[in-house]
Amino acid sequence: MLGLMTTTARLEIGGGKTVELPVRVGSEEEVGLDISSLRAHGGAITLDPSLGNTGACESAITYIDGDQGILRYRGYAIEDLAAHATFPEVCFLLIHGELPTDEERKDFRLSLTRHSLVHEDMKKFFEGFPPSAHPMAILSAMIASLSAYYPGEETPDAIDLNVIRLLAKAKTLAAFSYKKSIGQPFVYPRNDLSYIDNFLQMMFAVPAEPYHVDPVISDALTRLLILHADHEQNCSTTTVRVVCSSQANLFASVSAGVCALWGRLHGGANQAVIEMLEQIQADGANYKKYVELAKKKDSDFRLMGFGHRVYRNFDPRAKILKQSADTVLATLGVRDPLLEMAKRLEEVALADEYFIERKLYPNVDFYSGILYRAMGIPTDMFTVMFALGRLPGWIAHWIEQRNTPGGRILRPRQIYVGENARAWVPLERR
Ligand code: ACO
Image (cartoon, rainbow, N blue to C red; front, side, top):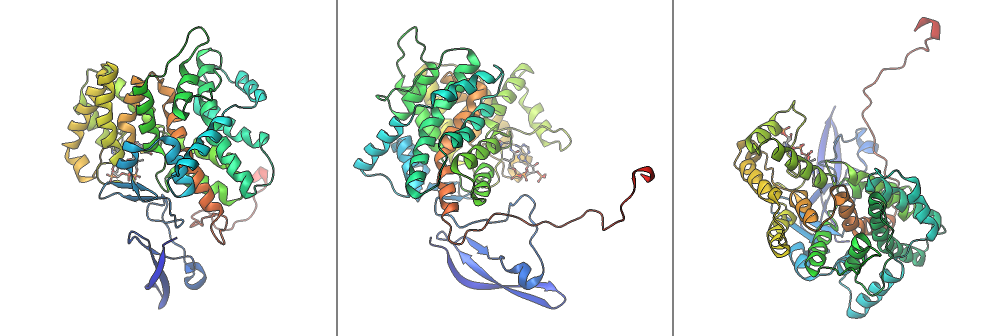
């Protein structure tokens, strides 16, 4: 870990009390005041309700410069990874810190293939869900359930194996949840197919006829999953790290991450974008009306797929996806009016003073849904796709959190603003 403690900052709290705080500087010159001794030496805590200004860890996995629109996994630019890597290569990179050698790549691929079947008993779980169940509900439940099948002490070897199991089985579970929702038989994984092609055939093959994976779709899905693979301390990753810090197992921690991702302010935004575009379309494609609505604080409407906590510039992933949407739809011969609508909406919003002033740009979710639609993936599976992509990131952070020397349970404090101590009131006097 390259974080260096270089200087000291001095904080005056009042009443003549001054506290010296170490300053930590990261490998990209990011500066953090280490306030871990503030309460002990200054009798105060920091208050940052949405954690927007709080670093909860030092991490060597992903670097983002939100002002410049830079994203790197383990030092490699997202643009290079999206152009050249396979998804398993990115999984390996995030989890192990380096790109795999040829031999490591082959071994990793073989392990992922060998572990993609799920225990036959798990198939029975699917029978219990109503057909209308959201696939994110099923995915989180199934990932948590893996702990029941693979319990035991988490030795380094056992963790390595569980990492492989999770990566390999999650795509099978995701495809099964889709098959369940449309009443088709489950399609088993095939060892001769790549990770992505295997997933596509489990989603779309039926026993009645042969299924051939379209390389354009396989390639587009590879890029999408790579772009989603990690994003440092976002809501779901932080959730995984918090759960991990209590020494909960990998499956339980990642299942919690799936739940955190589901919300529409996070990964659920890809589904919400399509629903919003359909609503605008049904309402006569009046972009201005919806941009105006998004600006009204009492309207409860936001432009989904716009804005980001860390990017105050174009999200580099959205840039790649916008280009990809054009080429993929053209190659597949798909004409989706929602793509044109998304572009028009982006244009109108980016010319608006409210969005300019707040530096609100399209994020990764703005164009991803249009690509998923073109591949034939139904809207309520979009966030599941995001979860499949984010798995290696969650796993890498779970391992990093677990291996943090002297790592303590994550447990924030609060400023209490409730009632002061008062006497018990018997029932007849309330
Ligand atoms: N539409 C309209 N106004 C917005 C939007 C939006 N999409 N996003 C932010 N704003 C406004 C806020 O109201 C706020 O205005 P104010 O300064 O007048 O109060 C200002 O821009 C700053 O926004 P915050 O809410 O403080 O930004 P925050 O970092 O808390 O939230 C978030 C980020 C949740 C992504 C937000 O931009 C949003 O809700 N976007 C829509 C949902 C979305 O696309 N989520 C996916 C994010 S990417 C991902 O998780 C994969």
